[in-house]
Image 1 (cartoon, rainbow, N blue to C red):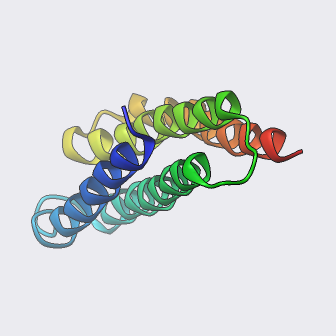
Image 2 (image 1 turned 120 degrees about the vertical axis):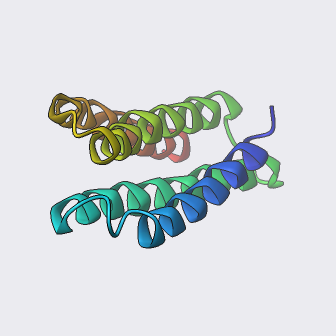
Image 3 (image 1 turned 180 degrees about the vertical axis):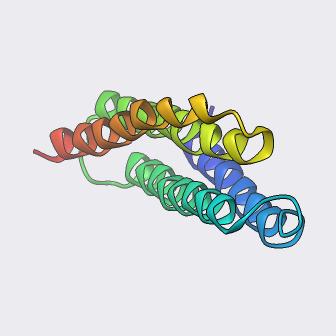
Length: 121
């Protein structure tokens, strides 16, 4: 599947989830919950843009290693799911144990950027 397509869907979802948090969660959670949701949305969007940038590199005329681009995009996608996803669910469900999953997602996000750095090295 096209990496730019996936990144675009991730970005659209980040906007929708940001709007949901700004409007629908005001009466459902406290300030700490809203901040947690916002953190999830910010990381979600910034890394969705990273996935799009990787897709743009993939179609650029410059010589790039497609394998490292795919690894990087895959790690960023997994990182978004395992970082932002648990934060969203924590706010919606109150299940505090989900906060322990987010650091794994953060490590995957870091690994995704390091894979991109490795590609350009």
